[in-house]
Image 1: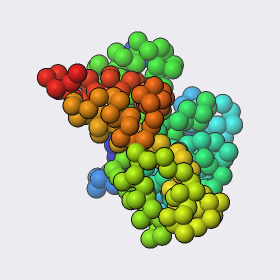
Image 2: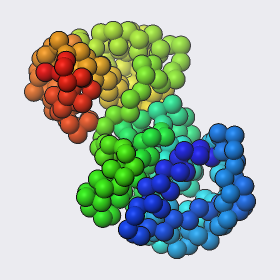
Image 3: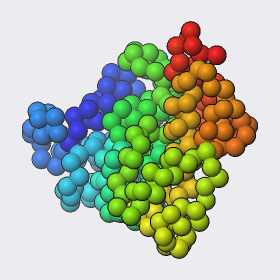
Amino acid sequence: MVAFDLTIPVQVFAHEGHGRYRVTLCTPNPGLVPTTSGFGIEVRADLTALDHADTVVVPGYSREPAPVAALAALRRAHARGARVTSICTGAFVLAEAGLLRGRRATTHWAHAVELARRHPDVDVDPSVLYVDEGDVLTSAGVAAGIDLCLYLLGRDHGEAAAIDRARNMVTPLHRAGGQAQFTPPGAATVGAELAPVLTWARAHLHEPLTVAILAKRALQAPRTFNRAFRAAVGMSPHAWLTAERLRLACRLLEEPDLSVDDVARRTGLGSSANFRLHFKRAFATTPSAYRATFCSPESAR
């Protein structure tokens, strides 16, 4: 398993300070559990701990098939009303247990395509930090688990409790779930036919791109291209274009000499009003607020 993913919920909930949570680590075979960091963590409880848990958090792991006993225990916990969540690649376990079927979910951007390929019945959204489906929640990679856990604390006990915990952990209060994962350009693993199209599209985001235009670049019919794109990238071409434009917008907003109108025009997001609407929907903040956060006080305006 991923040690950091495991310690995030422990840090947020076990040390919350008001005794609102009792945290138990459990595993199918109690003992020393190996981690991807090269050291082991001693876990003493077995899966019977899930029989009484109100919330179950599955950390990231190396993505091999999950133990049958663990999958069955997760299904039982969810069936009796427990809230089930995952951090990073823990989403693969939830999907394997059938708990993400027909639901929207996320995971680390680097593994989103694999999750979508393995589980086509899951609506994988690789562009967000976490997804709240009520009784099932998933988060993106590593540090996004902090955002999810602080969000859960706020959902359980109010925003003030989440703010207090974030302050104690010396971390900013959780980012909104709709905020995009900060993925590097070309993060998605795509085939040789599609990669040049994505590269070309990134260089022409300021233009009014459509599925038909991209399909023509790929020498495919629009419907064929749309299916191939979804299978390779894990989202529709339109959603990908919007995510890429917003990613570019974040980078441009860090350049203080560019106005919001300039950023809107260079990203192809239309008018400044339309740009602000897309930006707020994705990041739960305004372009000006983002700029104030990521630019130095001397350069921000």
